[in-house]
Length: 282
Image 1 (cartoon, rainbow, N blue to C red):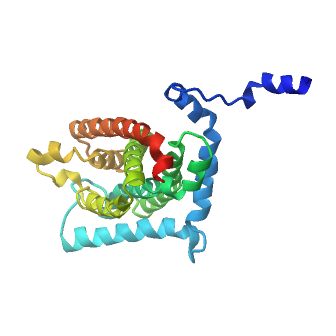
Image 2 (cartoon, one colour):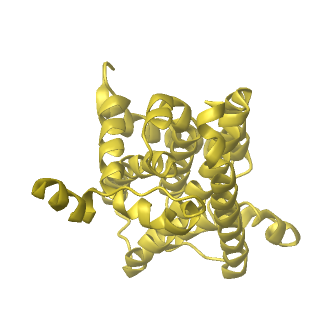
């Protein structure tokens, strides 16, 4: 009898489910299940390159190969120039850093709930942890690509300035945008399964309208503010400003950040609104 009372007095083992209390304690539960972020993220990292010939080397090959192709197409064939002082290859690779993170995060997070269907239908925990952990996993590729960027800067003898210390600010905005849009697409993908075929098209189309292979400074002034409605424009410009010291159009950046914050709020709101029906649809 005493053991039973001691067990009840241990609040760490109590799980109380009350009607109408879910929304109130939701973010507290996210913090309580914080170790699940680590578990899911580490699992995704180990599975990503499992049974591949080159393994984690793909994290190096993909951005290098893509940046080389973009440099040849836009610089050599299209004869575009970089208005800044940095070599064209560095300008392209600096744009590849946030874009690779965004595309990977969007692809992984949008299908994360469906890939963890058994976990969702059997165990209670805040579902937002699953897509968020998928976005966190993409930070590893970003770190590897950034190390390659530093090596390229040494090769081209183009040292960074003190502005690079502000790079984490732009990484935070990149993370906020990726998780906001990822949450929205994740929720839609659970309800409409054929939406997973549209997501690769969205990523591919976004690559064409985003200044990855060229500088946004080439956009005419009358279109600059409209172009800044693409959130990745401000983020990529921020990366190039911090890493390479390229010119920054702060008004356009402010527009992109406003869109990012709106999409972040809308993504969380829609995800929370539809979260209660995930188990039924999956």
